[in-house]
Length: 278
Image (cartoon, rainbow, N blue to C red; front, top):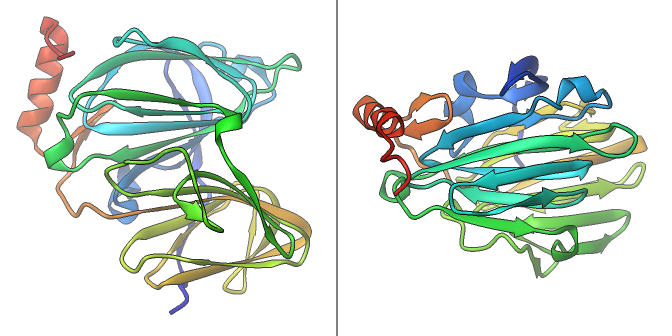
């Protein structure tokens, strides 16, 4: 059964961190619709004042943050001793688990552009307090396949055309694909029944189920075992994401997402008394 459009989102401009202006495509109020995903931020900007203040040191627990950079550099560091730079085409897949404190400082490129996305994925109760882990995935690590008939796919997680992405052994068994379609091309993608599936257009325009989509449009799909997207006259590029719902209660405050208010209280108390990082 082909998936139909469940809902369309355009997002809204918000300010986060120390003063970063970005587009929150979905977040706190929509989380139940996107289970197991919690939030998607689009931080594409060609104005350094929008992003240079960055995200100084802050904690996370109970989630995974996935940062995908298209243009520019992001300097990062964390309480596990990791530090470095995420550059154009790179992905940072960070599992906060039991607790991590980190910073993310966008720097942009030589022309002042900083383009990328951050997706938050929830962890199930049994994995909330797993040991933190950090994966640095460079652009060279991400396979790009020519699927034929005007379709090219970068595979960050999941499998397409017999190739698997480098982000493996992820609890929610996600797919994260960057798909480019030539003008007029239809792409049909099989999906496991029961998973949450959405696409986010990042360039060009096209149509899903007869409804037009363009840059900065998110389509949340209903149930089914495949989805279809058709590119318009200028072609279409989009992020395609799927994941297995957790169907668990969410207690969420800022950068920490747990299952109960008591667990939230414990997390913030531990952060204050210096026992947050295990």
